[in-house]
Length: 214
Image (cartoon, rainbow, N blue to C red):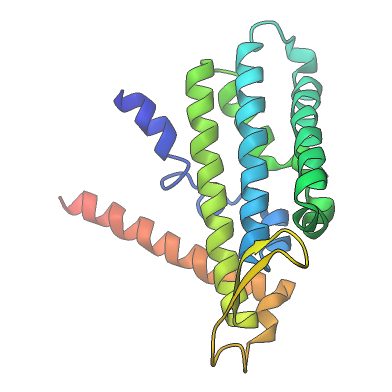
């Protein structure tokens, strides 16, 4: 039980794919202008990661080594196609906002990395737990970055954006009147990522020193 819990939680904290391993930077910087868009990307990656990890783990003993990467891509692309069709049909605003980053999930380093490094060597259950943990960690990271960028850069928090008539946007008085517009641009995203990465590095180092002292 402890081993399963470790597989589930490592992607959220200890091996967070965004802040610790630094994978999937393109969607991280590209779609985090609104909280709802970030959540949509995170949920999409979680679905694809879970499905592909389980299928690849189940087939790991029958996939020849010579074609394992193409096989992974075929499996991942199948789940990405499902996500694209569902978003296009039911959440067109998110589908349009994610744009090219949605089909690029096929070559997302997080998904390919977990397929090669974990699902290819572990059971279906452990691979599913690994996918859930990594997916949740990625979603939380995107949501945190998007919340900071949207609050500082626009003075709003977008909680729902299904269409022009189905939107829930919280406007923050004061900030919305004098936002820091650079935070909505790529430069602002890079600057924020630098500060957040520095914070997590400092926190990891502090914990490591505390463990050595003990």
